[in-house]
Amino acid sequence: MLFLVRMDVNLPVDMPAEEAASIKATEKAYSQELQKDGRWADIWRVVGEYANYSVFDVASNDELHELLSGLPLFPYMDIDVIPLAKHPSSIK
Image (cartoon, rainbow, N blue to C red; front, side):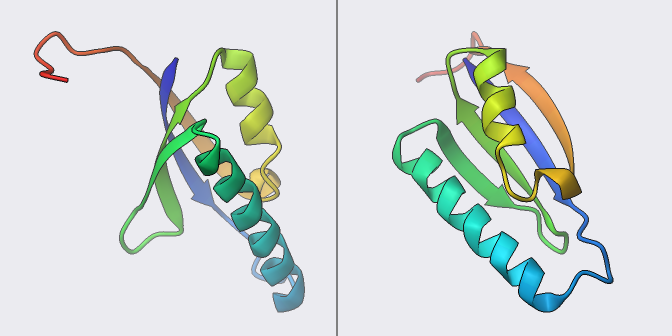
């Protein structure tokens, strides 16, 4: 199942820089493992924002929820999920 996910990150302004850096490093490692195993199929930065659009390829809604809620930045995110279906005009 494919999902388009927008993630907007809203770290507290008073979060210590060292804590933010640690969370971001853990997040990067977690996301790169999901990319390597194919479940996080693509990721794109939103220009000028601390946000991204990502495509996930997972077996179920529950698996997507588990992956997203496992993100170290999850407590600081606003997330929108859009299920995707193949378009009849697609040549792929």
